[in-house]
Amino acid sequence: MKQGGTTVVSAPGDAEVQQPNNQDDIMAEEDHGAEAFGGATLTDTAKASADTGTNYPGFSMDDIEQEEEEEGEEQGEPGEMLVDAAHLSINSANTNLPPPSSISSSTPPSTVGGGSSRCQAASSASSTQTKGKNMLAQIKADLDEWLGGLSDSATDQWYKLAMLKNECQLVKMQAYMRDKEIVHLQMENEKERIEADKIHGRLMERKKLDIEFLKEEGEVLRLKLVLAKLQAGQSSGSLPSDSSVS
Image 1: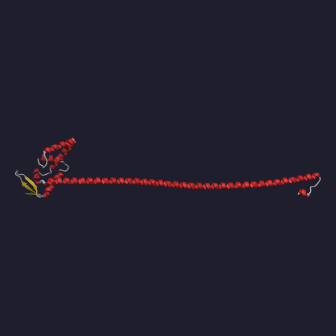
Image 2: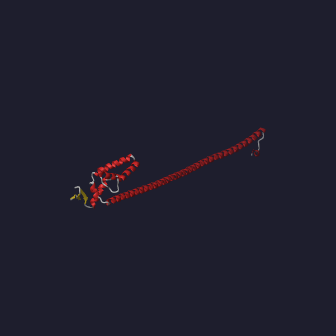
Image 3: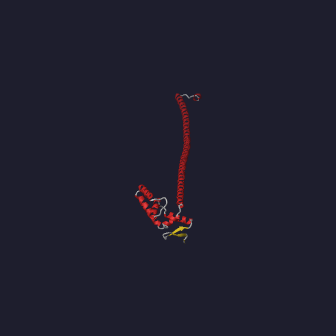
């Protein structure tokens, strides 16, 4: 008897078991089970099989107890609380799953290998993504370091250029002040020369006046001498001759 893409098979206990018609139905049920069991550990899956009475291959109660003891030693009470929470979530998810008999009868052993291959593919993709992120972070760090070194080098070059500009301005200022000083000294020398010329001219003029004064004074003395001789001749009653006068 067919119902919505599945075949209903009558069991000996008058129970109807639904079996998928094809491989697509099997994969759909497997994906549904994977979504229901998302985020749970292998221990939680084994617990769910123990609670529902389903015998999943590869799990036993001894393995469950041993794994719970190891998780309790590593994580302590918070780990037990997480396991209980995951157990409750799996139990709530089991309400949406088909009966255990249909799961055990419809799931072939090959689906276990498919799940492990998916886990390997997911872990490989995660590892590749992690490597890519690490490589990108390394490239970014190298680029930042190179840019930092370039920025430091540019800053040093700018500082050196500024120092050279300041030195050039200082040299220009010193040359300008030296030129100004030379011009000032030349003007001072010119003024001193002019003053010296004036003083020399005045001294020469004074000397000339002194010489003329001495000449005039000598002439006055000579005339005084002549006058004295004339007066002496008149007093003696004899006139001086022309030769004596000359």
